Image 1: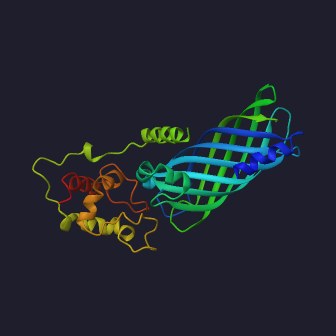
Image 2 (image 1 turned 90 degrees about the vertical axis):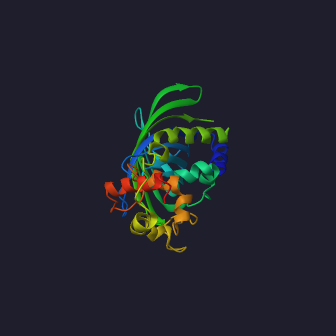
Image 3 (image 1 turned 60 degrees about the vertical axis):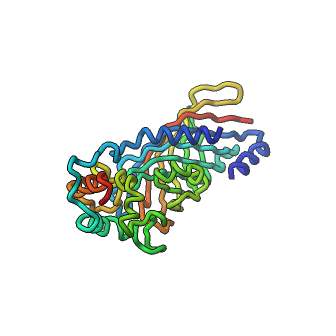
Length: 182
Length: 116
C-alpha cells in the first residue's frame, strides 16, 4: 500500500503534494464487557498524497499501549483523506479501512517482530473503520516544503473481531509534519 | 535501523509499564498457609480458567499455551500471573467483575511462596 501511495506521486507532479505528519495521541476505549482501559497513549504516523483537487490516499499507523491485559496496540489503516484550502490552514476529514493487532506486552517483548507482522502468540486481530477530523496549519515554508502543525480528533470503530475487547477507540493527536510538492 | 526503532519504542513503552513483580514481594517469614487445593485452584477457577483452561475456540483470545490446568502450569507462568493479577496489578482478568483486593494480596503471597 505504501509503495502504491508513493508511486502515485510522480504521475501528478503538476500540483499534488505529499503530506506526512507524526505525533503523540491520547485516547480512550470502550464498547465491550471489559472494565475499560482508561487513557490509551500512542504515537501516530500519517502519510498521504493530496491530488490537486484536494483528496488523496492516506496510510496511517498508530502504536499504543492499553492497560487491560497489558496490550500493545498496532493499528494500520488505509483510506482517503480530503482537505479544504482555507486562508492559512487546511481542515481535513478522513475515512479509512483499519486493522488493529493487539498483543500482550509480555509476548511482544519476546517476539517484537511478531507484533509488526501480526503473527505473535495470542495476538488479537480487529478490523473496522478509522475516522478523523482535523486541521493542518502551515507554520513555515522553504524550497517546496511547507512545515505544519496538525491536530485531529479520531475514532476507530473496530467491529470485526473474534475476540472480546474494546470495539471503539476515540482520541486526539497533535503532530508536526510537512507538505512536500515534488 | 528498523530494529533499532522498534527496540527504542519497546524500551520507551517498557518504562511506562509500572507493575509489581515477584521480586518486589518476597514470601513471608514462615511461609504461607495457602496451597493449590485450598486457594490456588478455587481462585483460578473463579477468575481465570473460563478462558485459560478452555478448549480452542472458546478461549476468548487467551494464548493457546497459557494454560492453568494444573499446579505445574501455574508455576510455569507464576511470574506473569503475578504481574497481571497479584497485589496492585489488575490488568487481568479483563471483565467488569474483579477479584477483591484481599484476594489479589493472597494470590501474591501464594505465588511468592512458590505456588505450593
